[in-house]
Each structure stands twice: as structure tokens, then as C-alpha cells.
Figure 1: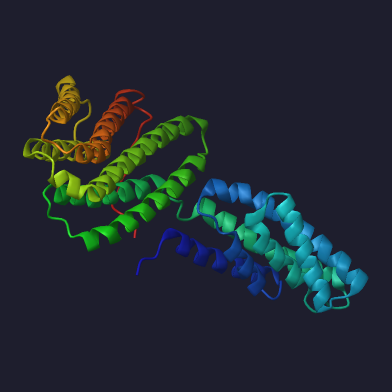
Figure 2: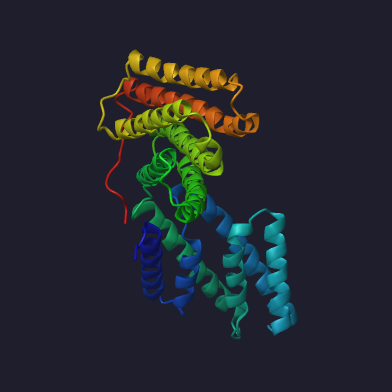
Length: 359
């Protein structure tokens, strides 16, 4: 079982909220812990942006709760009406993600109020805000998210899986039931990586001078992810057109196998270059080799198209595979140039922080 940083942050936030509430003598402290659970965010920037919304939403909930209890009592149907209003107002304001905490605030304030209701409501409100504040502090200080490290390893893991399957398919050795399951997993992995990239893009640094290097990395990781998606497209297409490929001339099959071997090796080399295991600055000869490979592939394909002995339907159905290979090579070349540019310019700012995989 793996315990991620967010799980630890949630535990720390709950602990901190309970200690603060107890130290201030506010009871029951468990309400502060509940609020801390709802307030934990996956990034520092989102935590900063969300805390403002949470304060606003909690004030609205508290005000509505106080007004309705003083006017109509705290019967269950009154609580239900307030909850509906809280949800409706936050939906109108476009604050869907903080609705759960706002609802909890309203409910705990309206729960069996004492005679000194205003004091009671204020105490419950402060308990909620202690939980929110504890989560914000933990997000800012403890276990800051390592989106760069996490995303790099996610991409390299996916690339390794995709490349293995491409090599098996081009040699007609793939087990299709297993491939079908892995394709679904890889599709889900791409969605998760898109979300991590979005978090990384939304993240902010404390100093303006650090923001530009981070944004250069965002551009790089976007292209890394896009290149991985292209390789996954090739894998899907090879899987879909496996029968057509086997009916292609041996010359074309062998060239596609060799070309994909070269391109996947090139892809792995680029990723290692970013990590610092391959020296930067790709030679012009390598770029020329990639370009020659594209031209040779298309030349062979169209030459064989003129062969009257080929089945035209097989040729048409296999054409997307060739087109994707050409696109893949272009995306890899673009990624390689971005990595070279990253290390060539602004050397004092472009620091790569890739460590071992997070647990």
C-alpha cells in the first residue's frame, strides 16, 4: 500500500487543527478536524485560492444559519432549507468545490443551539476556520507537492509500457487480451498525467524570478506528455491494424519495425537527457537521421502503393499507422529541441529536480 503526500498532509492538518482547538479551549475540537479534511488541497496555489472561497462560503453559511435559527428555530426542516440555500448560493457563485465544507458549517452551527446562540454559533464558526487554517498552513509548510518529479516518473513509466508493447506488436509477439487491458490502463494514466500537469501549471512560486524557469518546464512537460500520447496513438493503431500489417510486404514491415525501434530509442534518450543522464545538445546528424527516416518511410509506402499486386483496402487501412509514425517523429524532434534549448539558455535558472519515485 502506498501513502501519498496528500494522505500525510490530511493527517497533519487534522492533528494541527485538534491541537489548536484544544489549546484555545473550543469544543468539540472534532469539528475543526472535520473542516481540515475538507480543506486539504493538492497544491499550494489551489490552497491559497481556495481558502478565500472557503472563508466567504463559511461566512455565508454562518449568517444564514444564525438568521434561520433565530427566526424559525432549529427544526430538521429548517436545517434542510438552509442547506438548500447554501448549495444554491455557492452554485450561483461558481464555488462548487467548497460546497461540502459550507454545508458542514451550516449544520454544525444549527445543531441543538444553546441559549447563548450567537456565542455558540461564533464558537462553531471559529472551529471550522481553525480546520481551514490548519490545512492551509500544512499545505504551505509541510510536504509541498513535487509535481515535476511525480509527472516525470509517470511519463517515463507510461513510455516504458508503451514502447514494450510497440516492440512486441511490430514483431507479432503481443498477447492481445493483456494488451487490451493495458491500453485501458494507459488511457487512464494519460488522464491522470493531464491533471498533474494542470496542477503543476497552476502552481505558483514565492519569488517572481523562479516563475519563468517553472513555466519553461511546464512547456517542456506539456510536450513530453504530447509525445507520449502520440506513441500511445501508434500503439492503438498498430493493435487495430495488426492483420493489415501482416499482409504488408516484408520490406515495409521490416522498415516500420526498425523505424519504430529507432524512434522509441530516441524518445528514451530525450527523457534521460532531461534527467541529466545524457549530455545535452543533439547533433545535426541525428536530426538529419530522423528526417531521412521519415522520408524513406513515406517513399517506401507510396512506392509499394503503386504495386498492382497489393490489396488497395489493406493499403488504405494501414495508411494511418504510417501517418502517426511521421507525426511521432516530428513531435520527438520538437521535444528534443525544447530540451536542448532549456539547457542551453538561462543556465543559472533552469534547475532540474528529478529524484527517485515518490512513494
